[in-house]
Length: 240
Image (tube, rainbow, N blue to C red; front, side):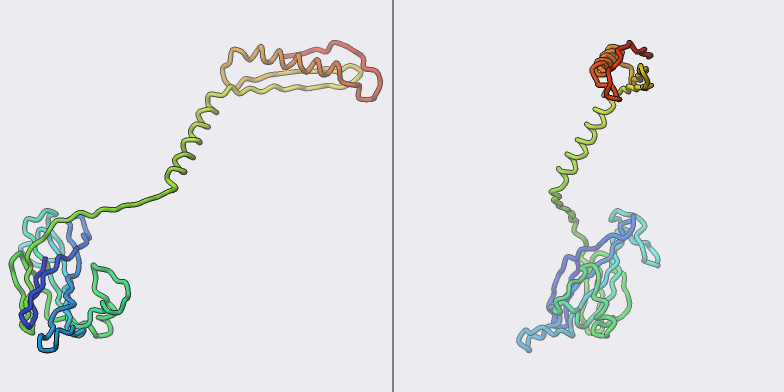
C-alpha cells in the first residue's frame, strides 16, 4: 500500500498488485496516480502532464546494506520497497491495453513521462519527498489470493476417449487370439494340410481346430471339380 500526497496536499492511497519474479518473492509492480496534482483553482480538471506513478521493487526481507536488488528471504521479516518516481502523461487515456505491473514504455521513450529524482528504498512507515514538495509513503502490504477459473467443455470428451481406448486395450489383452493355416496341393486328388497356432494359453483350442478342419473338409467334398468334370472322392490327409 502506497500513499501519495501531491503538491496541493491531496492524499491518495493505492493498493498495487506486485508480481513476484524469483523464489524469494522479490516482486515488481507499479503504483499509478492519474488524478494527482489537480489544481483546485482550475475547476478540478485533470492535468494529463502532471500525473504521477512509481515503479516499485518489493523486497519481503530487504538486506541491511545495498544493493537492494532482491529479497534475502521470502517471508516478510524486513519488508521494503524500492521506488522510482515518474511524472507526466501515463497514457491511460489512450485506450490502449497495457500491463498493470509496468509503465507504458512508449510514454517514457517519447519523453511524455519522465523520471523524477533517484530510486529510494522505503521501509514500512518511511516517506520520500519529491522535487515539487509532494511525498510518497510506504504503508505496508496486504495479503491477497489469486484464483484461476477455467472451463473446458472438451475435457469430458477427451476423458471418454481415453477410457474407451483403455477398455479396448484391456479387451485385446484378454482376447483369445489364434491362427489356422491351410496348405492345399491340387491334383487328381487334393492334399489338404492344416495347422493351428494359439497365441495365448487356451485349453479349448484343440476342439475349435478340429471343428474348423471338419468344416473345410465338408466344403471340399461338395465343391465342383476345377475342370468341370466329375470329382473323385478320396480321403485327404490332414496334418496338425
